[in-house]
Length: 89
Image (cartoon, rainbow, N blue to C red; front, side):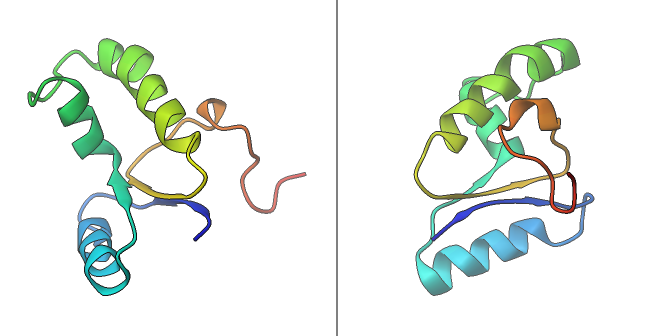
């Protein structure tokens, strides 16, 4: 498996795809919103600044340090990644 980040709008079917990949192939997938929820002790974060400046960078670093991952999210700031988006120079 490779390193892959899937970005899609809300209700685009990301969770459905996660379930399919995990059930069909046994791949370990991460949903950023679920990881935020877990990292915050099972409660949703209402403070966007805390979420975006503290939790998201910590979670992204933890996931992207793995040798293989599939991360699903509705948003991601490319400054958290060490790679360039496809097609950029």
